[in-house]
Amino acid sequence: MTRTRGPALPLLPLILSLLPILGCDPADGPGALGGDEAATTATHSDLVAFYREWREFQKPSFTDGVPDYSPEAMARQHLELAGWQARLVAMDTAGWSVAEKVNWNLVRAEMNGLDFDHRVLRPWERMPWFYVMIHPEQSDVPAHEGPFLAGWIDTWTYEFPLSPDAAAELAGRIGAIPAILEQARGNLTGDAHDLWMGGIRAMRGQSTDLAALGERVAGTGADLDAAIVRAREATDAFVTWLEEQAAGKTGPSGVGKEDYSWYVRNVHLVPFSWGELVGLHRRELARSHASLKLEEERNRRLPLQTRIASAADYDRRLNQAVTDYLAFLGGHDLLTMRPYMDQALRERVGSFQPVDPPDALRGFFSEVSYRDPLTMRTHGHHWFDLAMMATDPHPSPVRAAPLLYNIWDSRAEGVATGMEEWMMTAGLFDSNPRSRELMYILVAQRAARALAGLFMHANELTQEEAVAFAARWTPRGWMPEDSGTVWGEQDLYLHQPFYGDSYLTGKHQIEELMAERAEQLGDDFSVKRFMDEMEASGLIPVSLIRWEMTGQGWEGAP
Image 1 (cartoon, rainbow, N blue to C red):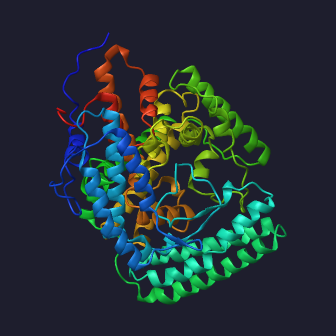
Image 2: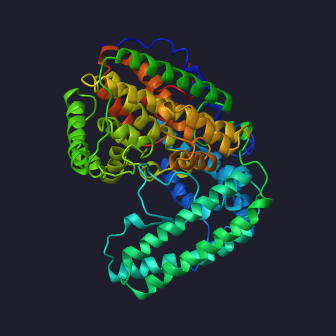
Image 3: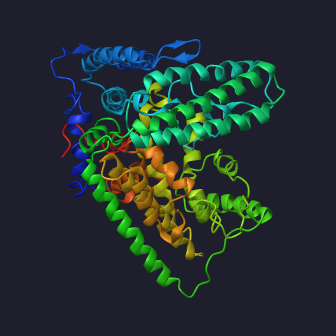
C-alpha cells in the first residue's frame, strides 16, 4: 500500500536552498549571469547538441601535443565563456521533462565550474600539481580527482608489452612533457605556498613514475626510450626550478569561505555552506569517536584482531571476502546483482605488501583491510559504478561521460562511503563484532580529514597544521603525520575544494533521500528499489537524483 505523501523531514528543507541555483532562474552569487537574456525555443535535442559543442569549447587548444594554458589563452576563454552561459540560460525549458531539466542543470554546473576555475582556483597559475602528466594507476571514480591539464597520460590504459603502434603513440605523448613544463614556468605566477609545495611533491612523484615506466618498456622502441629519458630530465629540472622559487611563495592557498560556499552550491550542487559543512563533519567526528568507544566496551572480552601476515593468507582471505560480500548482498536482496560485480571486485584484490619490521604501519586503509578484508569490499561499490558506466552507460549523452570538475563526487563517494556503515547496520559484521570498530574508525578518518580540508580552505590552518589535525583525530594512530596517506589526501583536498567533504556529505544526503523516499512509498519501499532508482539516474549530484526520484526539490517544492 502506498501512503499519501506527508510533509518533508525537518532536514530536507536544506535542499530547498538549492532552488535559486538549480532551477530555471540564474544562480545568485559571484559570477552569476543576469536575468535579461531573451528566452529561445529549444528542445532537449538542442541541449545535447549544445552540450557537445560546450565540451569542445571547454578544452584548451593544442599545438604539437601541448595544451595552451597561457594567460592570453585563459583570458580569452573566460571572456568567451559568458556567451556560452548566456546561450544556455536563454533556452526555454518549459515543457521539458524533469530528466531533461536535470541535464540542463548538469551543463550549467559544468559551466560554473569553468567560471570558478578562472575567477578563483586558477590551477594553471597557482598549482604546479596541475601539470602532472603521468598517471600509472586507475582511479576508483569516474575521472581524475582534482584539476589536471588536458591531455594527461593514463599509462594504466595501455596493454603491455606495447605494440609498435602503441609505443610510437605513447612516445609522441610523453615527448610533449618538456614543452608543457617549459610553458608551465611562464604560467605559474601565483604565490600560494602550500599549493607550491604540493606541486614539488607531485612532480617528484612523476619523476619516479617515469623511471618505473622506463624500466618496464626498456627496449620496446628507441623513440619511446628517448622520450621517457627527456621527460624525466625535464621533470627533474622543473622540480629544481620549483624549489628555487619556493622561498618567494608565501601567500595563502585556500579559496576562502565565501568562494568555497559558492563553489559547493553552484558547481557541485550541494545545499550547504562552508559553515554548515563544518557542523556536519564535527558531528560525524564526535559520533564516530563515541560509537567506537562504545563498541570497544561492548567487545572488551573478545580477542583483538590481528593483521594478515602472509601472501598466501592475503590471497585466500581477500578472495573469500569478495565471495562473502556478494553472497551477503544477494542473500539480503539489497541490490540488483549484476554479472560484472564479481570481476569488478576480484580484479581489485591486489597483493600482499610486506613491511619491515613486521608490525610497521602499511597505510591507513591497509590497517583496516588487513584486519578484516570484508570492510573495504563495501567501499568497492566504486568499481560497480565504473563497470556500470562501461557496460551499461546512461542513455543520455550528458550523463554517459564523467561530469567535469568532479561534480559526480557526492554520488560516487557518498554511496561508496555509505555502503560501509549501511552494510554494517544490515548485519554484515554480526559474526565479527570487532569489525564494527573498524567501520567507526573509517568514519572518524573521513570526518577528520574533511574538517582539516575545510579549515585549510578558510586559511585558518596551513597544510602542515591540517595534516596534524587529521592525524590527531584518526583513531589508534593509524594515520601518523608523516604518512603518505594524510599528505596525499590533504594535497588533493587543497587542490580540489569539496572533495574531502563529499564522502560524508554525500552519504548524509543519500540517507535523507532514503528517508524521504521511504515516507513517500510506504509499504512499497525497499532498499533494493531505492538503490536501483538511484543508480538509474547515473553518477550525478544527489540533489538532482532527489528531483528525479521524488519529483520534489524544484519548482513548486514544499
